[in-house]
Length: 143
Length: 442
Image 1 (cartoon, rainbow over the protein chains, first blue to last red):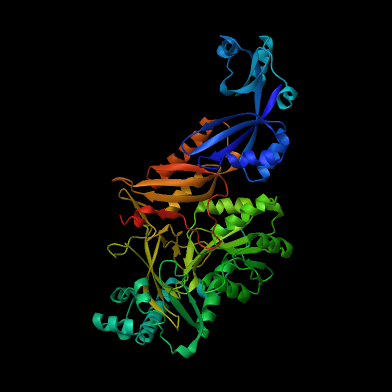
Image 2: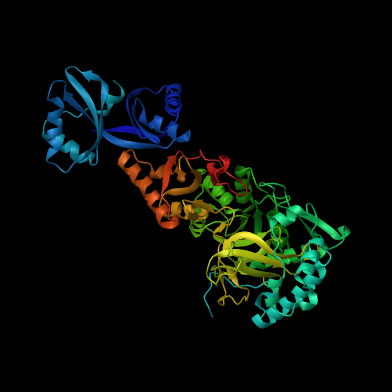
């Protein structure tokens, strides 16, 4: 089950983060989690929102450089070695993890992490065969 | 018979004058011109100092005995010190915009305007204009020569003109589409603005009625031509001119599109090294120096254009005999000296266009924070090149830096900025900010 992430190009200067967040807030779109990758000159804001399609169209129409990226949400046991179990699945495979970040909420004794794979379908197949739970989109968007 | 993109129609038989007849005509016209210039104090004084007069002009070799004229000379005789006819004979004034100081004015008699329209008609017809076409002119009308020059040239051909003038891009698009314009006339940078907005409004090239375009007024690149042609689905032609000499109409491309034919029956061209003032060999870039032989109100001798271009004397398959000049690759005053190397903004532009996916909106900033010059090129990111992966973004940036190094020979720091954040220009684009000048370092 793939999740839609909004990726946003931001210049690294004051107010750049505020503006798109305000657009989403005004439209009643909730940010479920986010991650910001930045360099001296620019940043890439990655967002999981309650309504990705509306969020995408809104930001695009407002002139933002925004892209819809497919990512995978994975349940990870919230204990020492929990993440390691997931990473081991990909250790000997050809699937690359481009980047990852966490949700602020957990599910019981599990944490939920977002993974960006170069090949999400292959990643999901590997996870399924290893018995690791991939979180569905409805659960992520409508928590 | 050569195969052409479209019919190679020639407006004026003078465009095909055999070289020997052309040269004889040039000598006669130069002699007449020098005689008329005895009326201009600046030239009268220079002729006396150089011991030269009309009777001593026997061949084109005698040209080098005549004085060079510079922009500073025109400014010194502001506003109309170069008039060669009585003021009462003037029917029009044009001028430079004066962005870099006092404006300079040029004057036209009735005959001058007839000549000018004919020269513009020649290159317009060479580049596909036909009497049945509708021409949309998005050049500035006013002191700037672009609007009026092309307007009366197209009118002489018999085309229908939409004098839209520059600005209000949305309205331009409405006019072009509603009136089904065949030909677009403006600066190439403004054409890109129009193309960009058309694309944003969902126009695909097959929905745009334009078939031809005539661009001038500023230097541009071959890649920029391809970009505009691809976005708008038209054939774009380059033309050249400057107000001091006459305005547009000095030269223009033919159907072959391999250089602009200089209208040598009316203009003498030289190509010189801007430092030594010595002629450069054919094919080498140099500063163009132009003499307007036949103008009445303000003939000008050996005007230093500051435009850097190459001359190509080889015969053209189209049959026109005027020597061809290449694109203006820069202005000798726009030339940046970066750590001792000569760099023209057009080279940066070419590098940007070579990297697939980079829109040609950019700004070059030059500074000298310590002892060395540093160049930053801000480039607007095209949405389709954006990636959520940082590594991809770095690859794009490095590609641009590498191309700049290949084309311009300098190491520049490239900054990707959001689309539509750099200033847009409706006339000539301003692409360089040189902080060294503000600091008094150069």
